[in-house]
Structure formats: C-alpha cells, structure tokens
Length: 438
Image 1: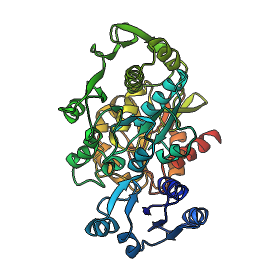
Image 2 (image 1 turned 180 degrees about the horizontal axis):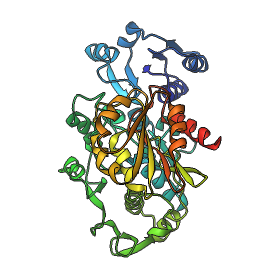
Image 3 (image 1 turned 120 degrees about the vertical axis):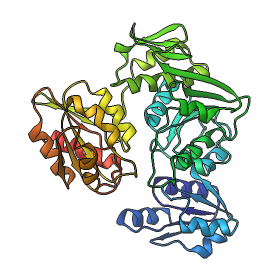
Image 4 (image 1 turned 180 degrees about the vertical axis):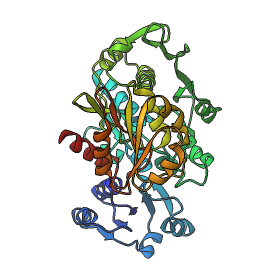
C-alpha cells in the first residue's frame, strides 16, 4: 500500500496499516523539520518513508493508494497512479472498511460541521452510548479502528476532500449543515465542490437517515432522490426540529426541548447546529430529556466564536475557524455590539463583497492583513473604513489601538491561514496569546 501525505491523516493511516501487517510506502512532497520527525516515528519493519519526494515507481506498483485530504485530486502523483490503474481511496474510506462494527453518523456541509459533529458526540456520550468523535474535526477516523473494543457509534466530520475518494462510506445517519461556495482555489467550479458533497449519499439505502437543513434549498436539492428517511431542521418554521423564535424555544417536533437562554453557545447558527445534532441523536434513540440535559451543558469548540477575554471593556472573540466568506457572515450576524473585524490571510478564490452589507451598520474598522489584504480593501472599502497590515501581530495591535469600551474585536478571517500559519488552530492560538498578554 502507498500513503500520500504525512500530516495527521497520512501518519495515522500508515500506523494502522502497519499494525495490520501491511507493507507500506508513505511519502510527502513537502519537506520540513516536523515532517522529518513524523517520518522518523513511522519507520518500522515493512514501512518505508520518503520526505520531499514521491517515488512514482513504488506508487504505481502499490495495491492501492491512501490519499490525504490536503492533496488535490489533480496532483500529478495521483494522475500517474490513476493512469496505472491503482485504486485511490481516502483515509476515511479505509477507516469505514475497518470499522464494520461501528455505526457512523457523518456530518458534512460548508459551515458548522465541526460544532455539529462535536455536539452529536456529546449528546450520545451523555446518554451513555459508546461514541468516538473523529474525522476532519482533528482526529483521523482510522485511529478509532485501533480501539478495543470498537465504539458503538462514531460522529464523523467529513470535508468534501474526504468524501471525494470514499466509495464505501455508508453512514447510518448523514447530516448536511448548509451549502455555500468554498474551496474555489481547489475546485474548478461551485458545482464541482457540491458534487463532492453529494457523494455523502452515494450508498444511500432504505436504512439511511438524512438530517438536512430545511432552510437551505441547495441542501434539499443535493439530497433529492436519495433513498432513506429525510428529517429537516429549520429556524422559525415548524419542522422535525426547529426554533420557535417568538417563544424562545428549541423545538423537537411539537415538543419544547430547551429554552434558547439555556443553550450556552453564541449565535443563531449554533441554534441550527444544535437542532441538527438533536435530530441525529433522536434518530438513533436518544431521549428528548437526555438531549435537552446535554445541550444545556455543552461548551463551544476552540476557534469558533470563542470569547477569549474582556480587556478594559473590549471583548475579544476568536473565530479563526472562519476560513471562508460564508463562515464570516455567520460570525458578523452573531455579534450584537459595535466591532472591529480582523480579516485576511490567504484567499480561497471568492470575493469579499457579501460581507459589505453587515459591515455598514456596526463595524468601526476592518483590519485587513496578509496576502488577501488588497482584495479586502477593494471589496469592502465602500462599506466601512479598511486599514491594511501585512503581519498578523500588527493587525491585532492596530485593532487594540482602535477599540473602544463596549466594542468587540472579532478575528473572523474569511481566508485560509497558510500565508503566515500552518493552520487555523495555530492562527487562533496566536490570537489568544496576544490577547492574554494585553
């Protein structure tokens, strides 16, 4: 077997294959101290590791290639493997084959995947179900296959990249949070991106349950014609799970589930995430009482509208996970005070003009940093003041200088982190450190 990519996913796949006695060739085209250290830890009898290159002769002779989600389907090494007739699978597909005794609840969508996945895991675990939380949320699903005994359930976050090469993935419950343009730096079109999302339904059967955002026409179109039961969540309009805005209640059908004031998560988008998780848990037999109790005790994930601290009357909020425009729109709707927005990084091929309307009323200034700063100035300069800083630390310092008591300083970049950071977690951790030092 060949494994391409030596970040978390590739390293985990290599370790699992080696534990099964499979001979493995693992490689990464990049070269760094961290990758060389990973390569050192992976080397074992039957395992060969390359950093800084892919040995194409080994790859075309492999029984199959396990591809990490960070590698584009159009990468030359995958083209060579396909032309040689080598099967290409995602780590998630490999894990699905290994976890035959574990039932999967798979969550995809553009935004809210991680929070919804974590909520589902929390609801099931609180109800006493043996449950793992894995996938794009940070823990490769294949590591669950090393557990003894295997859990009854796994709540799995699946990105479009992971769904692309997962032909055997068959969720017991599939959840689609929403759809919006994303990853246009990798996909040729929005339609191509949505086509990978649609792969969630490729093995639909009469046994399948699909939890869908009933307010999102794109989601409903994506699931149209899929076999199985469809259950909808909505904001404001009655559905299988919905939000009674007038009364302030999260509803499960006609039943009051939880008062909005008792859900300790910011923003209406998190009401939707909670409703999606509620339907997933309800679909596998968790009682309404257990769901309500667990929701009242939930805590938000790091880097997702995470309040860091209040300093001299200014609330600093870390939303580093907002790596696209749709995510930042959600954050802007959740902030109910005057704010300064820190945005930027590496753009993903989409314009920033959709943010303008929400910036006009309450945004004092946008601090645009990194590679995308000129594009942010161009697209948002007509809505509110926009200032440029190249370095992230300088952007945070400038926001501190401009903020007034009662304001929010919101890091919600609408961009990937890769111009100055390894990932959004590193960016969010840096923001948190800078705030804690103030």
